Image (cartoon, rainbow, N blue to C red; front, side):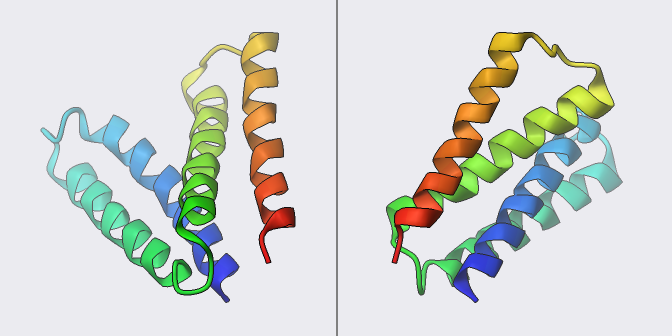
Length: 105
């Protein structure tokens, strides 16, 4: 169950990162409320995941899911660069996430 909590925590990290973009520096009420709520949910789920996953692994995977997902969202929704080195770098982060999952008991 801890890995499910961690995965959903990573997804909500993507949600709050996108929400932060839409909140325009927390100057727009509802995007700001969404962002702050998503941050709370993400951290709560991360704390639940820490019951069964070592902190170094959990934090790295959580941040990695957020990083890869947010970068992908930036490409898909905000026309961010698809430069090959950028995509390879994002891929390396994804490989690291999978590697951590495979080596964690």
